[in-house]
Length: 186
Figure (tube, helix red, strand yellow):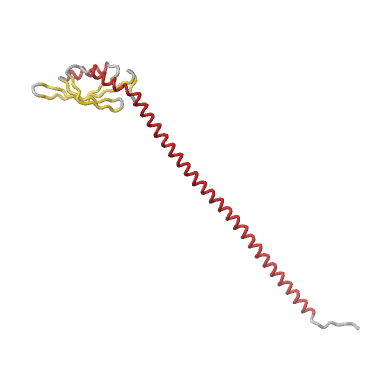
């Protein structure tokens, strides 16, 4: 006799398939969450590692900027020292020139001319004085022009004044001091 199964096997089979489907879906959701979490963890570790590298680079940049600033400071100090050395060398070179200037002025000063002031700016010398007459100022200029250490005389003014019973001429003359007898001072 044939056996007939009257139990609702189709219903049991459907429930089993739904349970398997739900378990597979749950496993898939858990696996997807795990993959997303692992991906986020990997990216966050990569980001933190890059941030550490960036921080190290920033620290190195700050150190290098300090070094560059120190080097710039040293270069400026070097330039200042070189400028001082050049000034000292110029003063050493021009040391005998002032002697020549005073010596030559004393030699070229004609009789009857008296100096009241002198000012030097670079190679240009301003001479203020008093002469017995304006012809003596002209003689001074001719002698300056013939001098080896002095040259290019220019008269700014000659004023004749009455001083008691005598007349005097107050004058201002500009001249250039020559270097080594021929070259002009810069």
